[in-house]
Length: 78
Image (cartoon, rainbow, N blue to C red; front, side, top):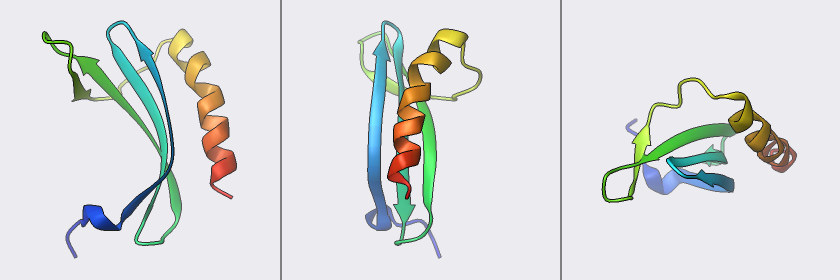
């Protein structure tokens, strides 16, 4: 069965925006299934728009900033 975006429900989302991009912590449930946490990174392009980027590694400040977001997301997964 192919992915259907209509079945993907966003239950929580909080983003940290910084000069060169943003990190977003979200919780999704696909087709009323298990709740799953997603961390995504978007960088700014030349025009200043956000474009998807591989999350890769995070520096200490990024981790310290989104850790409370992850704790909020975890609470929403009950």
